[in-house]
Image 1 (cartoon, rainbow, N blue to C red):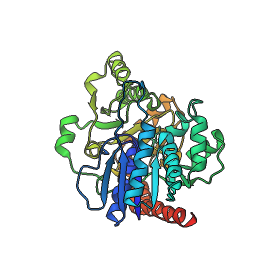
Image 2 (tube, helix red, strand yellow):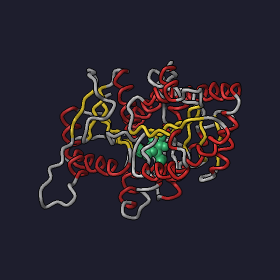
Image 3 (cartoon, rainbow, N blue to C red):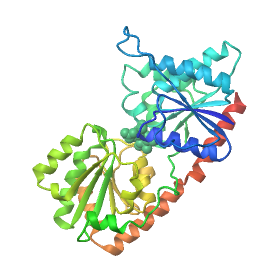
Image 4 (tube, protein in one colour):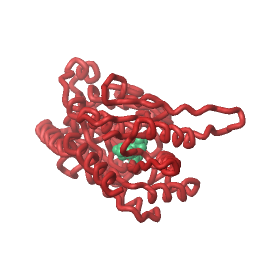
Amino acid sequence: MKIGIVCYPTFGGSGVVATELGKALAEKGHKVHFITYNQPARLDFFSENLFYHEVSVSNYPLFDYPPYELALASKLVDVVKYERLDILHVHYAIPHASAAYMAKQILASNGIYIPFITTLHGTDITLVGRDITYKPAVTFSINQSDGVTSVSEHLKEDTYLHFDIENDIRVIPNFIDFRRFSLKPRDHFKKAIAPSGEKIITHTSNFRKVKRVTDVVEVFAKVLKEVPSKLLMVGDGPERVNAEQLCRQLGICDDVRFLGKQEAVEEILSISDLFIMPSENESFGLAALEAMACQVPVICSNAGGMPELNVHGVTGFMSNVGDVDDMAKNAIYILEDDERLAKFKEQALARAKEFDINYIMPLYEQFYLEVIEKN
Ligand code: GMT
């Protein structure tokens, strides 16, 4: 197939899923065209089946807000027409689904038919999409999609609950590539971070409010009283300053490192004993899956789709959002006994294997074929 993929080319989960999916499809022999405003973060190598088309938005002085959606729709028209694409797959509804819809209409008026699939990732539904500013356009473009997928059952139910959706939604979960995310021997690195054999606890995110990063610090401060440990905070974003401030107030700065944005997250996960994800909402929790693939058990909230990934008492534990006491209690339970910790690590890996890209990618491939045939 010739497939067009539209996504946010950033570090965010939806961009990662879109890029990794495109790479896997290209390896399988499909021609994959990425259409976006920047080279996706993990697409920095040559492959004969991968193509990148940049959407550039000209910024006329009249515009306070350059019209990206129109530039994207026009670029889609061009790429579909001249590369003869079979299908478009847009990741994150806003504004990609409505741009795809517009491109489809323009192409139809030229006698060219192109179906498009929209994948819902989370905040496009749970936060931004629900905002009345966008809701009618989001509802319309989901209903106009030729196929819709969501990354968890919970996100699917949430979409039906909050939007007037007539389309079927197929659940295709996030996935992991074990060639990249697997335990790597990094003892020298572990010794540098935890010279006295302290346990290493990790959090990775974009430090937005929804991630509740100050809860991570609170949980860690409680754990530190019982288990010698170090906290690695990976990523950056608006809440970092509050998390740093809290570390100072609690007097735990010597045991916490803010590492900023990191490319090789798998290296950090390889030296970690526990992963904390206390999010307010998390449609799937790709970062937790990455941790589990590197044999790291997960302490998380029971929000969104997290219960579809983290098996309570087996691969980690879940608590109510904001219940830092319960999270700390569970973290201590896992960390205080080495044999128990080893068992949790083993079980986390076994669960992660159920989301191997080699199982999940064909579900998308199958869905593309169904949508193309149906239309
Ligand atoms: O979590 C983020 O802030 C990034 C966000 C995105 O849209 O890029 O991630 C969402 O999509 C990921 C991939 O499908 C999911 O694994 C994340 O759980 C989801 N984030 C939220 O629902 C908050």
